[in-house]
Image (cartoon, rainbow, N blue to C red; front, side, top):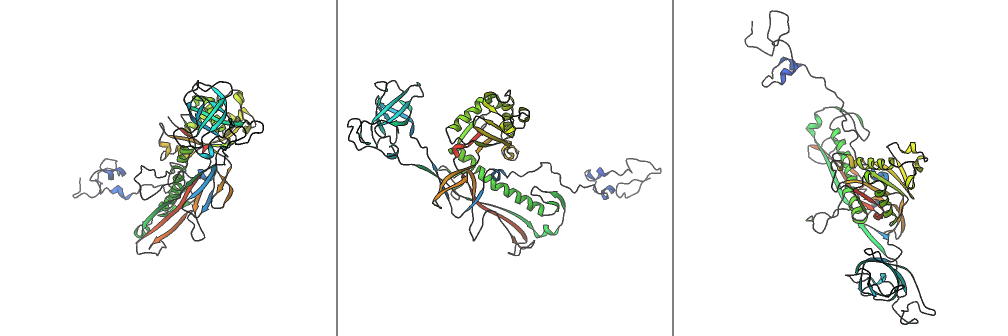
Length: 478
């Protein structure tokens, strides 16, 4: 028996039994050309709650942990950093056996030329030779020193270039003037006063913008979704779900731009921007870069880092922000130490308890005179950012000194203490550009234009100040 025409997907039968021709199957509606299946009237069960399959997706928070934010009113922030107290020169050459060019290839800085009667140490990294000399004359124009060695006739056994020279004192004759050379113990006019020098650095803020737009028609079509967002909002959202994620993404950009920022270089074709110096660029340009740190290298590789820190500020407390593999390498390195104090390592931060410390999840350790606090940096692990890159030149971690530094503020005209890492944002009594947001359009409560939409605008103007970058270490892959 059959009906003509047939409507839907039901074919009658003489008996009450399940057949392919009369059993209602939901997936029948998915078949090609089968759009009138009767089963389509039965709606599927829909979960209202959004599944958080990536957990907390935000990446910001790093700068809040290690620095501060302070307002400024100018297009540029300038700060000065101290130079070293003692006088030394690298890459010196020997024009003759009794002369040393402390500034080969360039005119000498008159304020940094070694004075006559100074005593210096000459080191040859190639041959390992060392000799102490008395400076008998100095040329303030060419930077060439005339010297007399204390134990040998001349410096003929030294390599002609690549020498290191540093001043350790002076020696004068009885009754001699302070500016007197060897030839005339009581006369001379070529003494050079060493004035303190400083190095000046600057950075400029960039303007960061973002916008979310929803049309008036879409706002009138309600579709609720239950969410729990990273900024603490929970419940049912509608178009505000997209607005909330735009805001979260913009807040991440505020930090990411400070970390990844680059200044416009001479070879760049950019003419409508100047860029800004981010954290990575500052460390690569003025700091220390460690390439290929692994657990296999053990304490030897880490001790090389400590030796380098000794030549810089030797700041006792430091923070390590690491990607997953590098963090595990540190754990493996420390776990390989037997007895908890081998090689000078002590677990003072763990009450010197080896059981407490060697739990494959260190939060801190001490080596030599330094304390290190270690944590994972989500930015380096997230697959949508640095976590997707592993290998040559990849960023695998950063060491940041804790505490504050003293610098001279050009605006205030005095020495001030600032965190080594801090953000400056444009602000005044008229306008605060730290984090601005406003509505435009003609929908959603905004009545500022004839646009049939609501525009949510975000803006910030800021830059990062990385002071004393010589105390920072950037870990990179090979």
